[in-house]
Image (cartoon, rainbow, N blue to C red):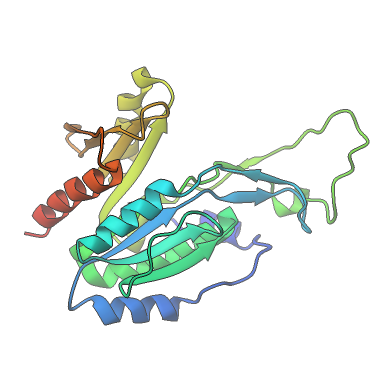
Amino acid sequence: MEEELMQFLSQDVGEERVDGGEIEEFINNHKEKRGVVVVTSGGTRVPLERHPVRFIDNFSTGRRGSSSADHFMANDMAVIFLHRKDSLQPRKHDNLLKVEFVTVWEYLRYLRICSKAVAVLGSRALLYLAAAVSDFYLPLERMPEHKMESHTDELVLHLKRVPKTLHLVTSLWSPQAFVVTFKLETDSSKLREKVGKSFEDNQQSLVVANLLGSRAFSVVLFDRSMEGESVETHDEPIEKLIVNAILLKYNKFNN
């Protein structure tokens, strides 16, 4: 099941930033005292040259992920914060480990490492996958070595689909974990259908569904039965309410 992903990761042109030992040590230091949540945050980048000057970027400030990490720690959870470099950050805390990525290759490599590391916690592992992940990339063999020439009137890129990995998280890397994903759409008529398809493909625990225009104050939490729970706010940060609702379901999942 991992073959496509491992072939994809072999094309990485970046550098290692964190090894799995640091992540495992953090988990071991906390596993007897509290739950551990992996929070992913920010957008991934796809370079268009081997010595990159141009990129395709998934825009995300990381606000939802960083704010959510703060609220998880306020509820005595230890947080592995897998975040885009220079995106918004949670407050400093003893229960926080930061893991930084830039490219989609780095993100997926560290997601694999983190997911496999928290598997030791069984159902007490929580994954909160709020990062904006690239859908397509330019394969290494199609990348020019240096900056693309700009004298032509047109530029045609043949992109390839990034391997889907969520089903690997839920079925292989951390199969007992409580896994929360996000589904963002611009068309409300398609949202429920897309959520149902995601459950069918990935068997995660919860999907936080939101629309682009209202995501800052209104979301719907769906479980596998497709029963939706609306979460809305007019004054408090919506991430606080999302985290509180998720932790209620997470605690029920573990009792």
